[in-house]
Length: 155
Image 1 (cartoon, one colour):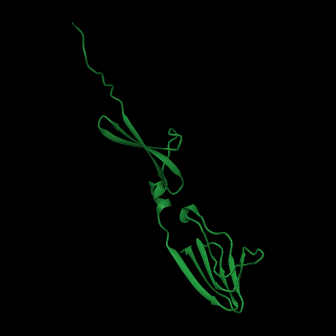
Image 2 (cartoon, helix red, strand yellow):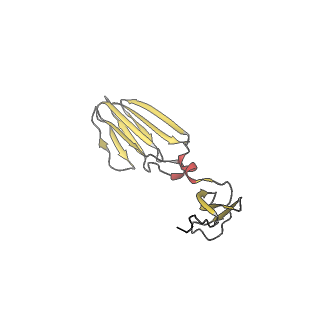
Image 3 (cartoon, one colour):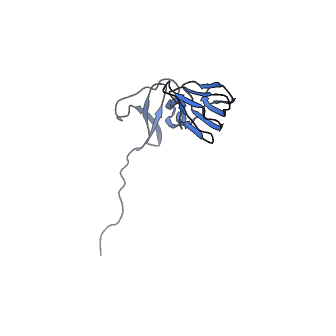
């Protein structure tokens, strides 16, 4: 029996891509090994248009996973008075112990919240994603009311 066995390898560059970000936008960085030498090429997301990064280059997910610094507030209101949480908070929580204080969100008509209630409003991503509660919260108590309001916001 005659014949040959074997395989043929064609030398081609090994290309790998990574999505990166700079101070302006996302772009692709192509890593290629040609004749044993590493080569990088930056392009726009189309993979062909040349791109020159501006500022600090980083993995895009790095900015979205950075935990921003959060400031917190807590205020107990007994009797007549108001607690205002300005627009832009990341979270707002109220616990009602006595009475039925009112809540106005964003200047809308105030609604009474009965004793025993606990309410929370929040967003899960802030920082570069820009999520905040866009409305101000105004909790107003009267004689005999007792409640606590807490909030967080980026600082």
